[in-house]
Image 1 (cartoon, helix red, strand yellow):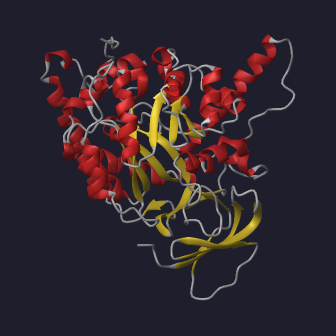
Image 2 (image 1 turned 30 degrees about the horizontal axis):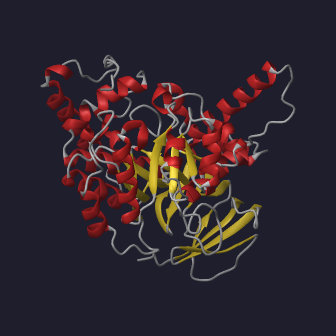
Image 3 (image 1 turned 120 degrees about the vertical axis):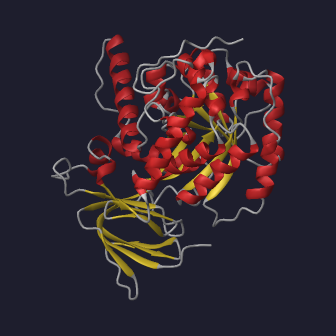
Length: 468
């Protein structure tokens, strides 16, 4: 049910991300019954809870289109690993020892972390669900967090032994019927399928997986073009197989060819860039500029939260910095200079909000501050040494802001963070549960000879994974 309260957010700098409305240097936002109903320089109403937004920037909630939330249980484990080490240590290793309660705790912890940093919507690319009970735990964690989330069912460890010959789990049908059979516009948690695609699964398996998703009426998110595994023209093969469509988000896209980018654009597909992980693990250069050249405005993602920070401010900085460096390098290689930066800070904010909503099929509902859309919004403090004087608000958000400046977060009209603190969160209880789960996870894994050296502290780097 929608949250029924009338709230007036008053006197903030309002960056709507809606071209038809624009930005208000000082403005008010009126929220009723979970929806934005009015945006204006000044709104006078009675019987409304008022939030003082002076010295605050009011923005739409960030939208993360690809995050493996279950890996919040292994925070900071993989920061010195390549993609091949990650496959060995996580998918062929620790993933097998997760219990359903570990998945639940990780999803709750990771979703709350996202909310606290201003990410109001995230797609849970959930490929650590080894059993039906693991899936139930993941969904429970998402629902309990209060975030707007897409549970993208992705199977478990057995489905990521490359090349996989295991079909997508039939349990997805049970999940669809049990939890998501009567989705309405008021549901915060919805469902998609996270498919392996031809990079990681045998091609006949891929065809069947795509047919399964469409039979269930679910959007598809799929990895393509991440490192060496992505150079074998996966998008071209999917195009020839008749699999492309506007219901697909293509994650990474680093090593797909330019003509494959155009195939994605021509089919109405969307893309998700995860610059931090892509550069760290060797996927290839982030594809932001090449996607733009093909007519695709990408969304942004955190990806593996066991290896990098979980906030969109960092993701925007990595993405814009990398693309600007590539643009300068390409110009210098041609004997010229860049006269005007083509990717702006406002572009980054659009990628992190409206384009994210579009990639999830939710741009009619979220992604901008627009009357009629859900009241998913964030207030970012500007009364900070790193934010004054506020000359360029988009530049300040991309290059200076951080989660510590996120003052207020609202999801569907419900305040989940206020005055810099999460509402109703027993942090100590959640922290101890996460720490206990982590300790038990490693103890179970270390009992296997192949994982005897698995440890915390930064001293464990698994041998690179070798596909069969």
